[in-house]
Length: 114
Length: 111
Image (cartoon, rainbow over all chains, first blue to last red; front, side, top):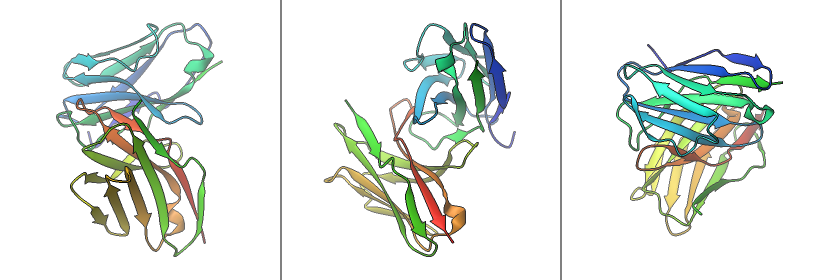
């Protein structure tokens, strides 16, 4: 595609429910990153994929958070048993090969946990 | 710990003036720094990258400097316009490419 796309653009859920957030990277980009941006906070790294493997998961805040990537393309970030503190904008970015390159960001998914 | 810091206070300037935003880093020496622009409700958009051996990089009305002695990068927008109003983010990349961002500085250019 022309750019990184994410869905849904907005998600409202109740505390305790599971949510899935989707990211479609730029076609051909092998590296994919997830970030989280909370109100008043900076962007924080969550997880990095190279192809279908995740060599860096160091930013996942708890075991309620998981992510997978299939076919070296689409990635899904899953949050189980959501908590109010999970409310944030979840951003996805991709690069051609990973490493220290310019990242192309999607528009984000705005998650609100009530 | 390794930190990258930006002035979290909003910067308000008059149209036509030069805006200068600051990015400071501590406890490490990044090989390069990246600058991104973020508009409300959107993801960050890459603007400029400057390497440690480059003193200055320019792109149209944008200029970035990198002072490894002061451990600081400055981001300048000359002849600023109201359309330049946004949040500007400074970031460094780890070897895997994950970006560590500063808090961002919000710029408001008044007509």
